[in-house]
Length: 245
Image (cartoon, rainbow, N blue to C red; front, side, top):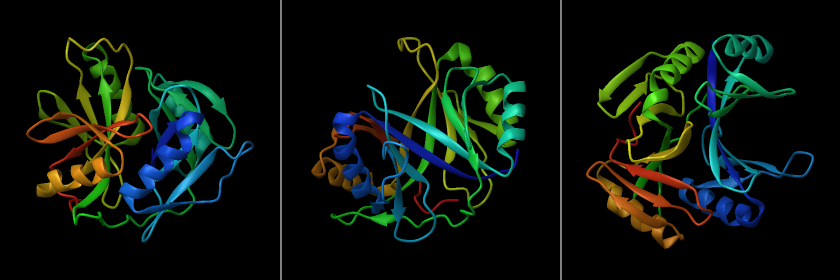
């Protein structure tokens, strides 16, 4: 597959949609587009520079993250995805798929996005960048899910420690894909995902900025901090360099 761009999508229940959109606009220094869709349920979060790669949707009862892969031939790539084990949920101009491990993702037409936005600075001076979608994978599904995503994207997988495999994205792609193996104490039985923001050595400052905006700290680790935004979306701020490729 020739993936030319990727987008993270926040699916937010109606009762928290406005609050969640405002929060993610604030932490990514973006502005919501005019709503679109049959029920005005979609919006793109527009950066100050470069091309957009974060969108929101009013959908469902529980907040979640899904991924759009932008491709040149949606129908052909959807057929190939099915051959790799995916299941089609919806086929329109775009195609909604479920991976072998149960993760919802979409194939969408290429609209010419190519310019990755720069990192952004928050109110306390912390610099961060939304740069990663982490797939949370039950241990028993890891082999099949990695095989699916590497074949689907054409990106090779590299194990960076016993818990994590990173898919090597092409230069300029806005979002890395990371697979995290869930522990045996986690009872999830299908693949889900969360967002990671890179903050380098400024994690504490960026976390404080997010708390000022309504986020709650759930866990503090050496390399990342886990937060929950005001719409219920769980995500991480990591020590990855926000200026890294």
